[in-house]
Amino acid sequence: MKRLEGQRILVTGAGSGIGQATVVRLLDEGAVVVGADIAADGLARTRDIAGAAGDRLTTFEIDVADEQSVIAGVRSAVDTLGGLDSLVNAAGILRAAHTHQTTLELWNSIIAVNLTGTFLVVREALPKLLDNPRSTIVNFSSTSAAFAHPYMAAYAASKGGVQSFTHALALEYARAGLRAVCVAPGSIKSGITDATGGYIPKDADWTLFSRLMPILPTTETSSGAGMADPSVIAGVIAMLVSEDGAFITGTEIRIDGGTHA
Image (tube, rainbow, N blue to C red; front, side):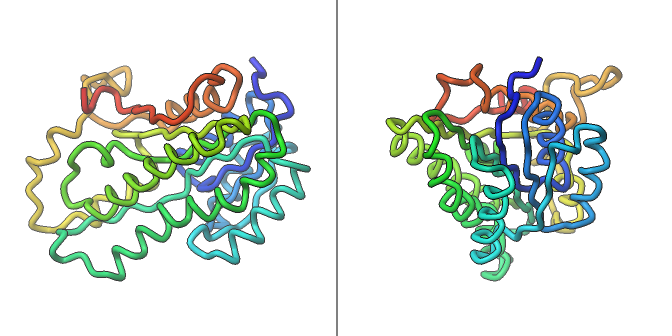
């Protein structure tokens, strides 16, 4: 079903994981997409995966933590697309450490990408989004914004900020026809989660992670353990930016296989 035929959508974090899966799903549903990421090699993989639909995909390198990069990148994306109907902010980083050992540099780097980066891209995209009578922003929160995840206090704080930011956007621009929604993934396999194990403190209490497992099977052979494919998030995002999501705004949708049921 081509729910997004002709829609012009910018996706950040498009070089891996959920962002990459989202680009592929949006293309499958007929959208014209600009995929942005800091990693050129990741964007190349996304173009390869897109296959024949790649004629509706353009990629740009953007560092969401750098204001000038965002200003130039969003302008280029809008020029390429000829406008903007939806924005998906999937760019993010996850680092883990004991809170008492978290340096200010580490804290600031997480906030800069996850929270400030989301703000910068939204700020630059808003004027073009508001040119439309109906437009959508999908930001990325996390289950960590509402449920305790050990050793991830800085990450959780950044995602809680994104969640609050999104609520404010939804109210401020509702009369202009803009919807703002968060997805809150959990137990999803991605580049972020693949790297997380390397950041967990060596003296971590691994029993604390037992409460972070999904209750639904994530593969045909699993019995509830493991992580789901990023495509499960991409499908929800495609719904949110389509007319099927027309009455959803100012909220977050938790997608975690029942991890926090």
